[in-house]
Length: 230
Image (tube, rainbow, N blue to C red; front, side, top):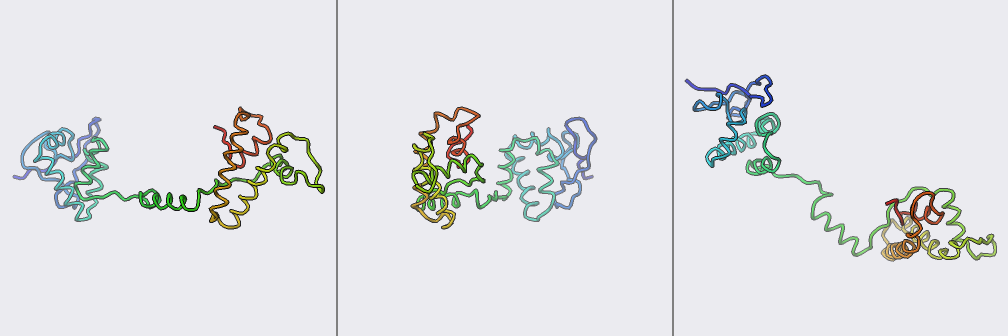
């Protein structure tokens, strides 16, 4: 008389669930050839699974079942990794079983090695684009305006020491970002110039970025993504 699996035995002591791991992948009870570990198949009993995976023959039997379900497109294959004794295995062991069963990992194109290589080559040729920024605050806009029009006769002069020191670099940063917006980040010259000015301004303002309240030039540099809160 054939012996069928008695059902999934919950290791935590819960009620047993009917077995769905038949060989044909139609959701029926699995057939077992001999009585072992409470009359349960390896997918419904943790002890039976350990016994099977500790031998080469038992591991081959588990893999063959998974291969058959995978080729048939049976939902039993997915259920085996969600609601069977395979869930107690480490993630690395489950990945190996999936690989042996013929399943291959599907990576997003944006995270693939080839896509990252293309991005690196593109940045090598055209330069790295500056980070996106939000709208500047009113104080930063005033500081930027004072730097842009510093020394012009039609604009009131300022006695701010930071404006006198950084007006050329700040005005150049604004100019290169405007050009990149107009050209769509395609100009290598403006990209390289922006990052060069960033290093110059960051070296000058970094000792003063201790914490809030920040100096107006430091606040502008943070909003321009030249400095960060960290």
